[in-house]
Structures are given as C-alpha cells and as structure tokens.
Amino acid sequence: MLKCHADAVMSLICWDEYLLSCSLDRTIKVWATTKEGNLEVIYTHEKEHGAIALCGMHDAEDKPVLFCSCNDNSIYLYDLPSFNERGKIFSKGEVRTIDTGPSGIFFTGDGTGLLNVWKLAESHGRVLQVA
Image 1 (spheres, rainbow, N blue to C red):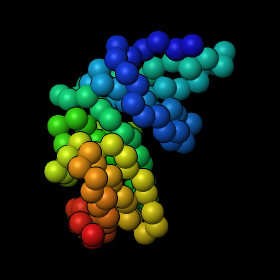
Image 2 (image 1 turned 135 degrees about the vertical axis):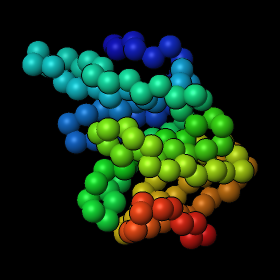
Image 3 (image 1 turned 120 degrees about the horizontal axis):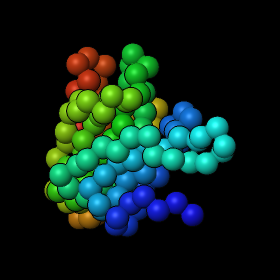
Image 4 (image 1 turned 90 degrees about the vertical axis):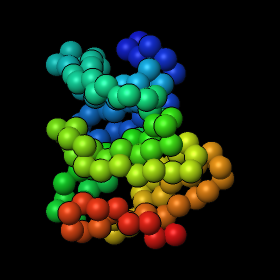
C-alpha cells in the first residue's frame, strides 16, 4: 500500500513507464518503478485547486499532453514531461471525467450534466470546442 497523497486520490493514468495520480490535496504525482520493483514518487506538481481527473494524448507533433481537471471548473493542459502549462479550458461545472478519441478529439463531462467535445488544434496547441 502506498500513502503519498494527503487527501482523496481522484484519478490514475499510466503514461509510458510512469503512473500519474491526482488528488484533492492539490497535487499531481508522477510515480516510477525502482530497481527493486517498488513504486516511488519522482515528481510532485503543485496545483492551486484540487485535481479531479487526468487524461493524456499526443498532439499532432506526437508530443504528450496531459489534461487535468480541477475543482475550480477548469481543465489545465500540460506538456509532458516538463509540466509546462500549455493552455486552460473553462467549464460551467466541475469536470469530473475526461476521455480521448481519435484525431485530437477529447471529451469532458461536468457536474451540470454537460458533455463537451473538444479538439486539440494542430497549430499552436489551441483547443477548439466541437460540440
């Protein structure tokens, strides 16, 4: 059992050889396997708000992008592995789930019952709302 978050763990994703976790403690943690086969935190990204959901995809240049929804009704986009902020999307309600589709499409579902369809644009890493 691993105890490294101070509040509820809300989402987990596997990314290449890493595990990423997010929590209401306002952190995203990156985990890696040690030589002994144990998981340990190798990086902690601090947020202003609690993190609710994680999802990832590759952009048109095949660079990894992480989506992180927070309890301030926003979704942050980060370049990986640097965690440089790439953009931010605002929602009417707390985004509780994010999933990816083909060709740069991704979906969000929020606390108001809305399902949104977005596309990560090929130029400048912009995000366009599709539906």
